Length: 283
Image (cartoon, rainbow, N blue to C red; front, top):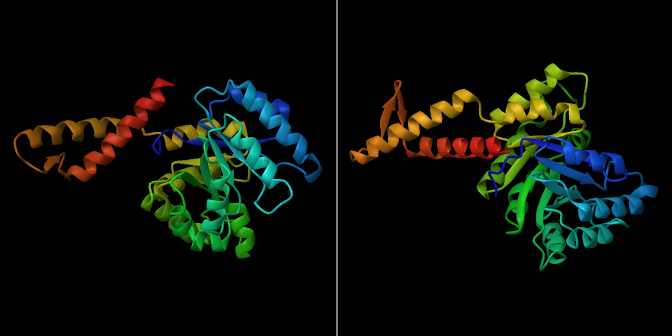
């Protein structure tokens, strides 16, 4: 389901058993159980075991569970993929994807499973090939932006307005939407900068992202608030849906509500907002 709530997407280090247990009580929509960047090389095997055990134990409720594997071609990737394929994880997140061939190779190892594929878009080449990657597999569910790696590879600078990566963010959103995929914004690195985090979330919403990746549980509530429909949006959506249905019953294809022209395209968006709000409310 592309439009399920994915407001808050929290990275959890796979080598930390306490964090994996705590995740069951956190109000994040999505958990990324990480075997890659958050795990030191000498802890990779143990982290894989801990993640497998945590998934087998379950208890994550409505939270969507993704496992970020080590990059294909590394010494750990094949064992990571086999573990995820045999687990109850909802999805497998491939880091540093730059080619549709990478997606198809991992997909082949998931044959016969219900595990969805997700791709990290975090390099210049990955951004430039985002549309090709998005079209690579019907198993693909979404993209996750890796803005820290992207800024490094661009030799750019982190700024409050994220000017260096705005083009990459928009290109990735375009590719995701063209192929019906979810798309998640990158992390905000300064945990003491609540104002900056709020600004980044507002920017992400404006650009079209479904949610934001997080590096600490204390940012979950803010992400959930920013990426959920507001009360005003929900009320407006209900109004234009009702007005449009009444107009359609009279044989009209458009209606004016509070001086604003409303067509079917606006109603489609309004229904999505209402359905998303209802799903969030049911939790």
